[in-house]
Amino acid sequence: MKKKILITGVLGQDGANMAEVLLAKPEELHVYGMMRRSSVPNFKNIKNIKSHPRFSIVNGDLTDEVSINEIVKRIQPDYFINFAANSFVGCSWDMPMQVFDVNAVGVIRCLESIRKFKPDCRFYSAGSSEEFGDVDFSPQTLDHPLKPRSPYGASKCAARHIVKVYRESYNLFAIHGLLFNHEGTKRGEEFVTRKISKGVARIYSELEKAESPQFPEESSTLVAPIELGYLDSKRDWSDSRDFMDGIWLMLNQDKPKEYLLASGESHSIREFVERAFGVVGLKGEWEGSGKEEKYTLHRKHKKITLVKINPKFYRPADVNLLLGDSSKIREELGWKPKISFDKLVESMVTWDLNEAQKEA
Image 1: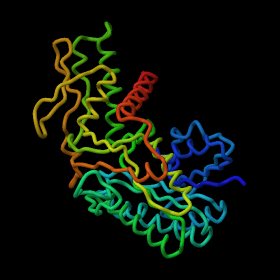
Image 2: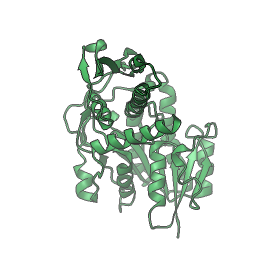
Image 3: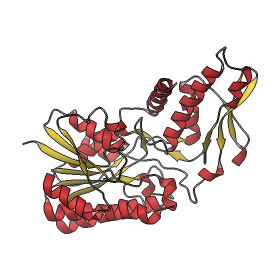
Image 4: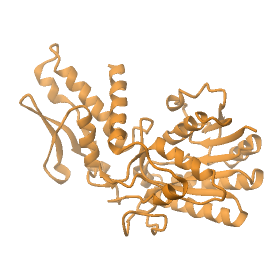
């Protein structure tokens, strides 16, 4: 019998990647991707699967209990994968109540619907390394204390506890798999990694254009730099596509057991900048300090600012280091990441460079 999978947040990076991964499997799986009715549809991330015969879009909203109930009753999903979230950490201070309504109370709505209308459905809730916050030790495991430093991190902690309560109280197959930072070409442009990769592609294209004969010599100095906040925050970055395989392994265990997905490597935002510019052959130099620090390029006797600090991107409280220990899922389920940090950065910059050239 064909298995039915309901994925919330299907227009986002993880939802779209999971849908692609599942539709490529040899099993007969039908994927239902949920999007909000109020959304201005942007189908860019699912353009390759939107017309797939085993893919359907359904309208629903994690803040609307009635819509979730209607979908679960009608579809009767075998799997429910929840990626819908207010997931931009920086904005969570500006709208903490909305963040909790989606990220925490929204998980309750999902679990209540499963409990009432499809209790044998397997539920996955996407956790975050931001739950650890002010870390006590590295690398972090699932046993690390939860000390979030943002409303977003706190909302994900709440979701983690909610999932545990429903699993133990109602014997549901419900897991909260903890994901460290994961990026890719489908990542939203407000996230720092995509901001950097798109910025590198833009700057490279502008420099190439400015140095062509039809442009004045001084035009290359007018390139707008990428504006960033803290440069030395370190994150454990992986490719989102690798994590989708791990999530599917979690969902198909005999009994619900939670795991942590991470690469086991930590890199700073500063490193990400350097690697990204390196993809297009631009090697700058850091100069200055604090709010005055810049990443500059000396090119044909000119100094061009590639990156500068903008204090508006500082967070009220930040996490300095996140590094995950995924040895448990590697040993017990055989998962391991396939895409290195360097390959991740290269793929993002290359993608955005191709997009920039199409728009030129």
